[in-house]
Image (tube, rainbow, N blue to C red):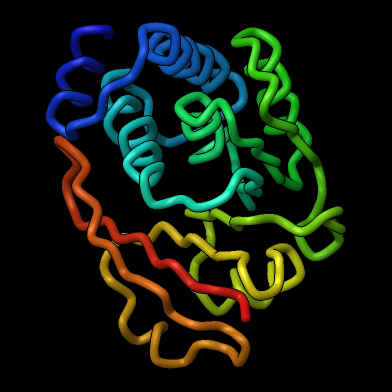
Length: 206
């Protein structure tokens, strides 16, 4: 798995210290182990997890601004845990409403020694951030409208951002953004060995 990760990182032009690589592999191993009982992801092959979960998450890192982030609907910790590993000076709140997922997140936090993340079990509309976040990240929402409707209270006003990880560029959704939001950028992401398109939508909360 180490060789596979090294080749993927090289293809993406990402350099990481050995400790972070070991933590990423440790996360994949835990995800693979728990997946058998908890059904956390439809991806069963650890090598595919490196592509579809690890790389698909960390290619976003260079585009994030700020230090406090919340990963909404994180599921088994995606993209929050890989980002917390490669961004150790930032803090990540991992929000999910399902207890079994949050138990898994706490186990990962414990086993990998990740002090810069906080798993929280809550519905997003009931979660009160204190203080608000620099960035709200999600790759779980069906539509931008749902994400913005349910998460509007989470980012700092004036400088907080929404980061939505999407597949095909959602031009139809971008034409009907709610008031108070500005489209800052649409970035086409390059994920080595991943079939299909990936885009990062960045919106500013006015």
